[in-house]
Amino acid sequence: MFAVVEIAGVQYKVVKDDTIKVPKLNEKPGAKVKFDKILLIGDDKGTKIGQPLVKGMTIEGNVIDHAKADKVIVFKKKRRKGYRVKRGHRQDFTQVQITKIG
Image (cartoon, rainbow, N blue to C red):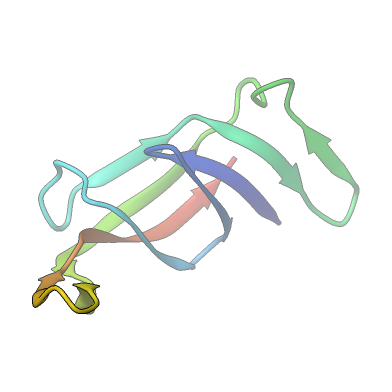
């Protein structure tokens, strides 16, 4: 069984016991979280598409850890002007392990 869920404006395809990286949540590691914006559910019997959401279904997960992604380098330059700027950015994310779909 799999599902497509929307978390913080981003859609993820999840399966039970799957670990996903989502934008940072305000939950402590070890806390349980529920996601109720389920857009699609699929299994061996068929697929159920929400209009816009599948009613009565939730996805549960455990927060594993908070971390930062790899550094992204932002380099700006204007030729022949002597203008160069180099900046880096690391986005915060939360690792969530999916425990239950349904």
